[in-house]
Length: 168
Image (cartoon, rainbow, N blue to C red):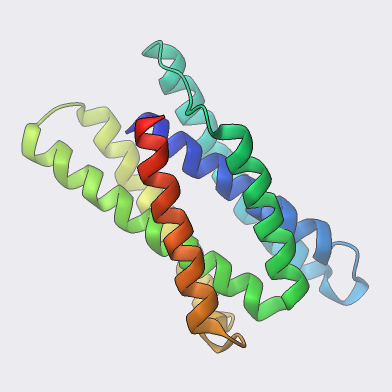
């Protein structure tokens, strides 16, 4: 669980950094760049918590972490270059998959009764991801040109990264 969640939060930070790299260069998109910086800061809090949890349990991140960072940054840049709504569509798709993933982990921990502190952390982080997703939807994510295809590809990529990170 921790390895996958660490990878997901690492990827989220990289996506938001990629989007900021594009929007911060555009004078008329400074507010949007600040919004993505704020979301990145929230993901940084999550990432720090998973860094600490991995250290406490003497666990390692996925061996794919460097690749995930690069792909995620490129995804952030790419969707930002497609425009504001495409960047929000990326956020909506990623955060939706991550929210569902956290819920599955919460359900599993509820069934076993194990790791109550970890369960509580997942609940809080899930709520944060829902806020990001809902903000993206409110900002027009679902009206992005090619939304269906873009969203499907991003969701499939996230789910694939989850499966791979759980193994490697």
